[in-house]
Structures are given as C-alpha cells and as structure tokens.
Length: 296
Image 1 (tube, one colour):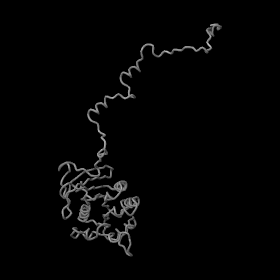
Image 2 (image 1 turned 180 degrees about the vertical axis):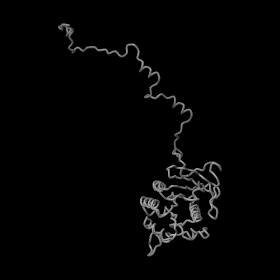
Image 3 (image 1 turned 30 degrees about the horizontal axis):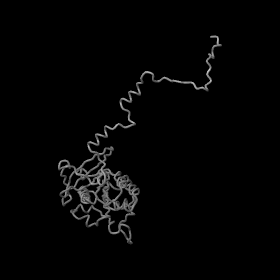
Image 4 (image 1 turned 60 degrees about the vertical axis):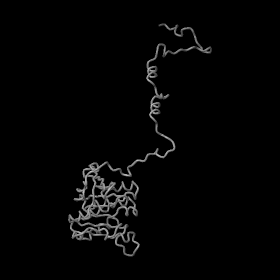
C-alpha cells in the first residue's frame, strides 16, 4: 500500500505522516515530495521546522524548480518587520493567495512541515477548519502533513487524523535502519483499509518495501500499545493459587440458590399452603347463621 500512495494521492486527498521521537518521518515526507516532483507536479512547502537548504538536501535535478519553499522557519511568529510566512497566515485566503502566485497550470500539492508546529500556536478547531476548507476549496490538489504525535493530546491527534484520507504511522524496528509503516486508508466509498509494511529509504529518497512484519519475525509491539500491569509493584499478592481458586469455586454463597433449595421452594410438600386462624377472645363471633332468615 505504501508504493501505491507514493505513486499519487487522489485529488482532494489529505495524507498525514505520523511520527514520534523514536523515529522521524521527515525522510518519508521527502520521499513523497520527490515522487510528486517526478510526476511533474508543483509542490508548495510550508517550512516551519527546517530551513530551505535542509529540506532540499538530497532533492536534486530539474524537478526541484517546481518546489516552492515558503520560509516559516526563520520568523514563524512574525517578530521581525518583514516575515516571509507566519503561523497566523495559516488560513484559507492566505494559503490560496500563496499557491496561486506561481504560474503552474495544475493545482499544486501542499506540504506542511509540520502540523505540530501549527497546532502548538493555533487552536485545533481552527487548524481543522482550514484543512477542511483547503480540501474542498480546490486551491490545492492534495495535502501532505507531518505530525509529531507525542507532542499532542490524543484528542488533538484524533481530530486531525479524522480529516485525513490516509494516515501513515512510522515506528522503528529493533535492528537496522528499517521502519514499520502502519497505514490506514479511507476510500471515497467510506471503506477503511489497514496494512503494515517494513520499509527503508535510500539516499535518493526511494522507498524500498521489505515485506510484512509477520514475514520477517514476531510482531513488533508499539510502546504506546503495551498495557502496564497494575499489580506489578504491589507489596501484597492479588493472585490466587490453584488450591485457593479451587476452594473459591466450591464455596456456596448465601444469596445463590442451590438445586436442593430451588426444588424445595418450587415443589411444596403435603399440608403446605393452608391458612390456619385462631380467633381471639375479643373477636365478635356469632355462631348463628346470618342468612337463615332468607327464603332461599
């Protein structure tokens, strides 16, 4: 599925590359930039985290002329008199104007490096609103964003990823320079497809898929998915031995009816169910028949 995404994102698509401190997704981001340039697409990069020189390092050849870097790295908050691009300009009108400054005939691909920088300075609802408008507005063909998941709360990450048509979460393997790409892709019909692939990236940013994690060894455990044992550091034991468990199963609880008790209640013996009444001394009881004067 990873090579399929590299071949091109559908019009109106939104791809998120989700990484963490254990593995950076920027090399994979540059692989997507390189693939878009090879398809003769114009690429606009909002660069908040690295300089233009660092981003273009390794991207060589004539297609680099279609790469437009908007410098939000040197002055992202607009502290100088003439900032190139600031985080406050992350809105539909400003981004549309920015993209349309170039004379490329086709809608461009917008790359955001990174969404985390924007989310740290703008409210998540405003960021999600702008992303949604960009997808529907037609100013850009597709959006690719890098997101550092461990910098944000789960609700923020979930809200942004909910807008995406594809999410690639990259985690490292135990040995070597390979990584695992956990891919979630949503089709236009609403069908959700998931896959995992082990990949490596060459110096020219070509992505080589090594195979599935199950084919190369035991499944890798994501540190975030590992459940902690709440009984690990207790000073007393909460676990039962086999003898204790057997005694517990044989214990008859007072509120649980046994088979014998159920039978006794449902099938009463002789003499049960009769009402016995003994009159009291103060009762007004007349031995005569009160209806003997009726002519029946």
